Picture (cartoon, rainbow, N blue to C red):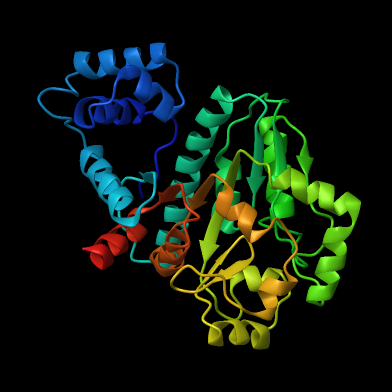
Length: 325
């Protein structure tokens, strides 16, 4: 079975698409892709020399790029990075889901690497999740000691390697920079406890640092008892069902959102420990998601205005196209 592509094989296609189809100048393409202008010039020359660019961009990715453009315009995000279709489809849903997650993880790692290599002194905020963890797995080793990775939410009570704590440490080790995690659970026993903790000067300084991140990486998910986020956070079915009755359909960075993107009035939101919702709304956020069941949670995130960039697979893209047509 075909596996998702890695590396910069399709970077020239994307540069050609932006230059010839969108009409961007080489300097604009360079900024958009976080590349040097010299690199963009070379990519465009290679595209012409190899026959990739004639009257139009002739490549299997052209349809994918056109769909990415449509999703960006229809759903109001600045950028949509869409993985190409898998060359072979699986009849096993679990395997197909895993391949989709791997493809999105690779795309996200390439996207993040380009930004890190072109941006000095970056503070990078991360939340947890399986797709974010796959991105961390796919990252190549860098040496960017001027960066800092910060966890956006407290640690899970059960950690199987996909919590914000684990992902922050793994990503920092790969980037070659320090990490700051929140040495507290993602949810405490009461809103009063959370408020008291947030007034502590040491914790306040850590939260303030996280709220200054230049870029935040998050995934989103549905709201159901036994879901990955709730299971790892030690949140019982009764509390999740209370949140569902209050209108929760999407979880992002521990926040629960309604379908219209509003923050749900529920106990779980009041007990969450991490950066504030206001800081998240002000941030530059990259949302990473795979699998068709993430479509409705992602739509809520986009309606909330939380997504600058989305990195998604074909399953979500096709679902968004059907629902948005």
